[in-house]
Length: 147
Image 1 (cartoon, rainbow, N blue to C red):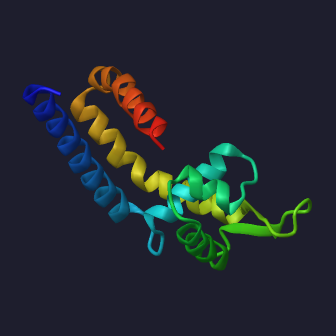
Image 2 (spheres, helix red, strand yellow):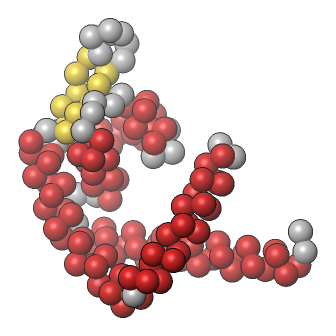
C-alpha cells in the first residue's frame, strides 16, 4: 500500500468510528428509559426478520460472544420483551421470539429515535445519503468476508 492509500484508509476509518460513536450516543440517549442499544438492536432484528432465532444465530448476527448475547436475552426475557423456548428438535438449543410487549417496546424506541435519524438525513441531504449507501454496503461486505 502506498502512503497516500494508507492515509486515505486511516481517514475513512477514523470518520466511520467517530460517526459510529456519535450515532450510538445520540440514539442511546433517546431510547425509552431502561432500554439499552443492544436491547433495541435485538428487538428490531427479531421484529424485522419475523422468525424465531437461536441465541447462537443472534450472537453471529451481532458479532458477539454467546455469553454476551445470553446476557442481553436474559434482560429482554426478564422485561417480557422476548419469549425463549426449548427447540423442539434439539433440546440443547433454545429459540427466541419477540413478544407483543417487545414489539411495543421496539416501536416506542423506533418512534423515539426516528426524529434523530431523520434530522441527520435532512441536514446532510437525501442525495448524499443515497450516494454513500452503496459505498458503506460494499465496505461492510468486504469486512464481513474477512470473518
